[in-house]
Length: 178
Image (cartoon, rainbow, N blue to C red; front, side, top):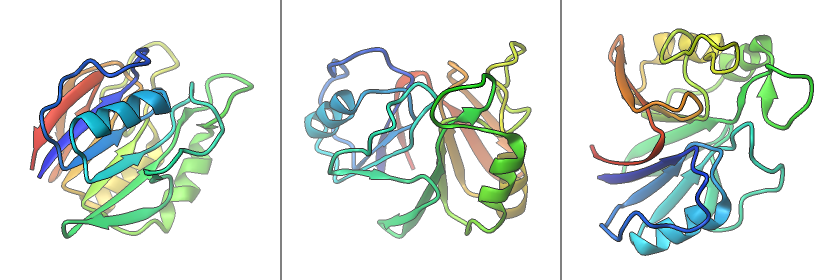
């Protein structure tokens, strides 16, 4: 399966080419117009997304499927996700206390691919008191061992292994094959 991932893009139009992808995954802080243009240009059969801490509170337009605390199946893989970042300031959409994320994910079912705006705690964190991962997501990864966790927010392109899970940080866009 070919996957196109977009995260934390300030662009309003897609300039990443038209190489085919089965699925587009948007990890937040990316405008809907860019997601839709990329999906069309690359012939994506499914478009999955979560919101970031800089996104508007309005729902995604079709055919974008919001994965926040929701599971979708495609090609025998289960996709699930989580919006936002930790609450590092008083106001803003899609910002959560660490305890809220713990509660969200405590009963969330196992998935193969977990899509998040933020990373698991201590994975790709920055020392700036803004780009800190979620404790609850780290616990979820340790308990359920999804094959892949894809996140944005930290503005990094990195891969880290946590147990049997590959955690992939994306900044801009990236293509992978699984």
